[in-house]
Length: 269
Image 1: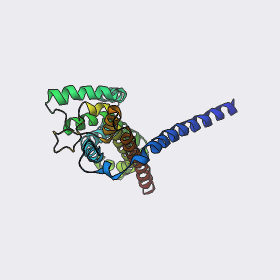
Image 2: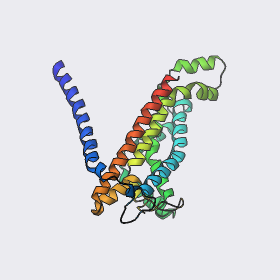
Image 3: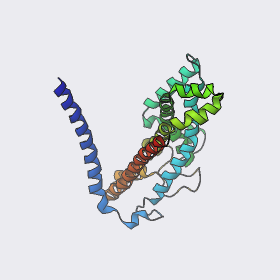
Image 4: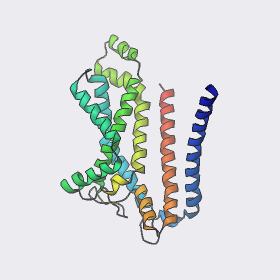
């Protein structure tokens, strides 16, 4: 039985690595050959199908989403773990909402964003509507990562800080936060990865305009949306694979940055 379990564990690990290697290799094989300077031009045309406006739109969307979701998610996680009393009804409601939001498919977020932000509030297909929708999507991830990071902080550190006369707020900022920061940061960077790779929710809120948004109420398309639109149109399939290469590189850089920063902060404690 021990050998069977060992074999299954190794086989599962090898299968997971094999699937990842196949996907990455296939995208690189199909897309690298079609990377050329024209698809990185500033202006999009039907001839160059440039992805550069989509890259800038993706960066703008990520920055605005983190600006909205990170403070709310981190503060909510601190409230649930540091301030809320056990058995509090509000805590139970917040946790139920958090778990519910975590399990909702992205297309549902997109339909909600379209009905509420685009139509009801009159934002139309815009960067602002996409930002609020993406913020709602990643909020449970940031909250959960904050809670897990705070759970990893030893209670003896809090007790020692209180014993030295530090107050609750000083203990949180001077003792708890530096220890929990790697976990919180990892959750934020994983949220970035989800926003970068999202398509369904943003299609109904951000829109699919090819040019760079000139304001919060202007439409655009992210890199993932750009790749999706090129592949569905069927006229620029090779360019869609090239876009997939760039998107894959960005996601790998985000994951690598998450690991590097977490290790850096952990060693610096």
